[in-house]
Length: 510
Ligand code: SIN
Image (cartoon, rainbow, N blue to C red; front, side, top):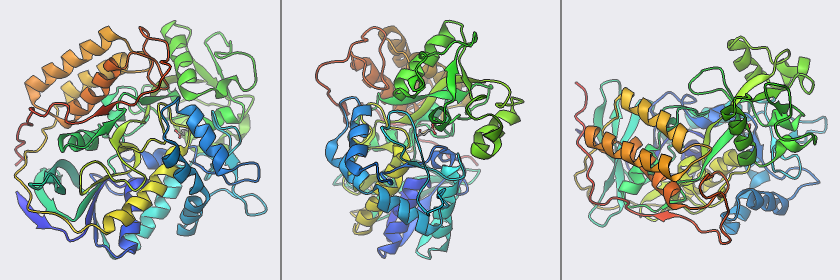
């Protein structure tokens, strides 16, 4: 194994959270090394975000109201202090990104154009090019990162382990580089995990399939507290055209009046004009039920968007047309698909985890602002806002002791991964129950016995075990055998789930 010492923070992941952290750490004077398995802009969820960035930007809105909506959506598990820190910073974050060159849509007076999405009491989602927010915002941040001399980016490096010193402090990471998977041990003053979510654990997902909860699993293995891992958000309108991952039909389409119908043309959620803008978990279950009952589920945007589709929603339009479907003429077949992981590595608003030297930001973190059900378009705001704060905090770290020897996580063969993904969608998806979740634990045990403790298996176990243990329904977690919501909302906190378990050593490929 090659060894290298980096005198500054190591950022693992290059979505909006990771790159915001890298930029701010560099601007605070630190030398930053960023690891990502793909060229910048590829394979991170941020670049795929369509709706935009939620922030109180208009005269009818306020950070208080934004926080209130966030808490209402989160079904009792939103942490008010972190949430106010987030919503108070909304305008500043949007303006910071605009100053970097993010071309937010503007009205004639130069104000931000905002869209309405589900469970927001006013229109507050700052958008870019209709439905192109994620890529446009991230492109501006990538340009700033490329121009920053204090940031080095390795665009071929996959996280394989976290390094600990004798005091249990995180002092670096092991990465596999290039097609051969050459292992490199990097010691650093701090590690900022920005590894994204776990959508790749599910067969039906709107996120890059490569994101399988590795950061979550390796942080848990390093002793970090994991918060609410059972809470996964399923988006009700993933376009069902047989693609993996499934393209998204943004919620903003429903904000503009597109309606959910079944195969007979009946409204799925009732006649009221705003019926389709209920909380995301409610709409996802309605879509799931219609499909399970054989009625089918479709998003009908013909009347509401019609001929405006190509310029109002170019990304959704292009995704439909690539699959031979013209949304101006036909309703779009939709399904509920994994979209966001609310749970994750417990972290504060500065990204600090319960392990010294380890920070977590973006989707892999759980800061308490999403609770049991994330309010649409709060994730880009969280990624940039708390990412920046974590970068500034990590820049002050001075490092720890010598790294202890570490074993790296094995990969799961493709066939095993595919079996896991299919079972996760079937049994840890929109509707869960004890029999299905217990069967999943048995499957994870079997795959682990066969292939070793792959990070994907450990991440799946965290989600499934917590879903099994939560005997109620709340937000994105719905148990058909426990449909009621408990009177008191409790968090799930997991630490060192299986401390005796040791991962197998991965031999790097030739
Ligand atoms: C969407 O555009 O529907 C997704 C927005 C989000 O998940 O925050």
